[in-house]
Image (cartoon, rainbow, N blue to C red; front, top):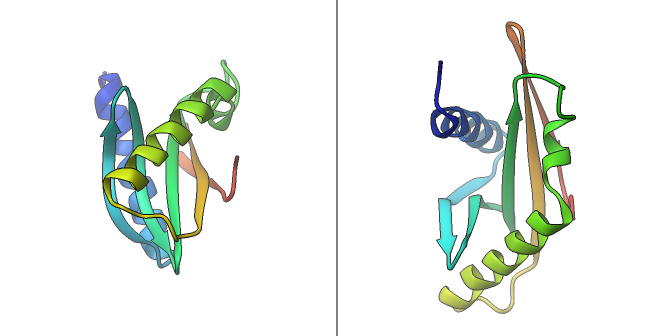
Length: 117
């Protein structure tokens, strides 16, 4: 049985592969600022994209994207502001995406929700 950290890393690796195939440029993974973390920071053309990855093996607790609660969104926004501050970025369009991954039996389904919040 895989640990929660290993499962998260597998999901993030799938998300990175997915985004790169769509032409995104990955800038950073697992960015931390104060008490927050952003799974993936990427560029989609000229847009800076902060990506939260959620993966689930069952629907028992709902869809993966349901885990991005209002409180989690607030924390991601605060962490994104930290990234912008640390990198002296103040003139770039930004967006928040969610990548939801369902591991069902032998198939994996990836949903990319752009401009999720």
